Length: 136
Image 1 (tube, helix red, strand yellow):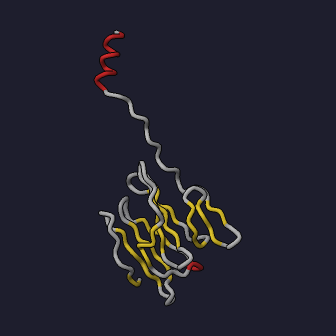
Image 2 (cartoon, rainbow, N blue to C red):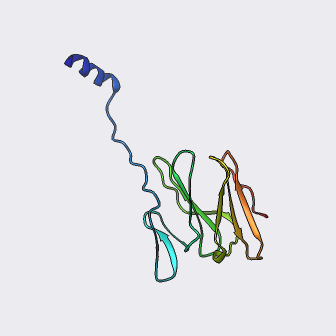
Image 3 (cartoon, rainbow, N blue to C red):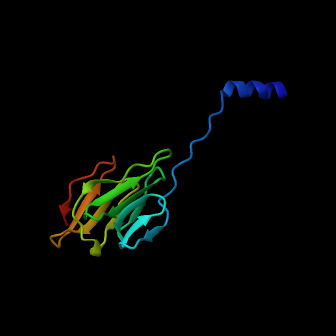
């Protein structure tokens, strides 16, 4: 029996240390400059605008309105934490918040009031691509 186990160990190859998944965003805290930040993911954003979406792969993606009024996002995978990105753009009034509408496991819509006072939205399709901002 011991020989069989030793052979099985050799057949399975050397064991590799598991790589830990990045920590979740963590609690939000406010600083003296009246901006908020995530304890684990940092970032600087308007308080009350943070939205967390759990993607189909079970890892979180965060959306916030940054100090320049653009929508920022950051997400993690099993092994990686991306940098903050303002690629979604937009010009949102933070006092009106950021609305996240989850449409399915793979699609969602972000909505905000733009600098023109109208509601705008951006849509994430099932393959992960985003549309341009459009007025509601």
